[in-house]
Length: 87
Image (cartoon, rainbow, N blue to C red; front, side, top):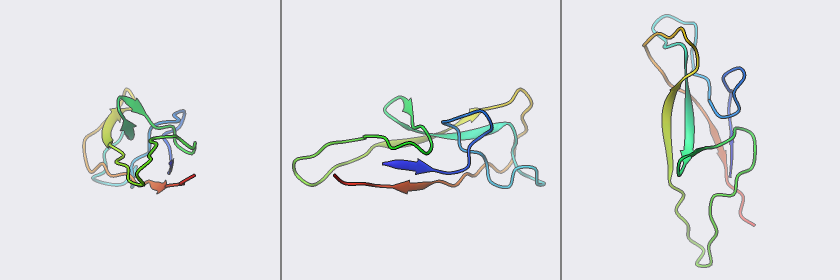
């Protein structure tokens, strides 16, 4: 699996928020997608599961993380593209 999207400057695991810098948008935060307790590195293929039955569940979670000492609340959405590769 590979997760692609815009990242917070200086981070390989935090997706940037949509509409940053606009009225009503949150700032100083990013979104991480995690599997288990580990954040997925954006833009890097990650092995997430193996299967012999042809079926697999991939438990993913999303969490907000603070990325700046200066932060403000507001709308905090992010966008990512998941690419699944079966080998």
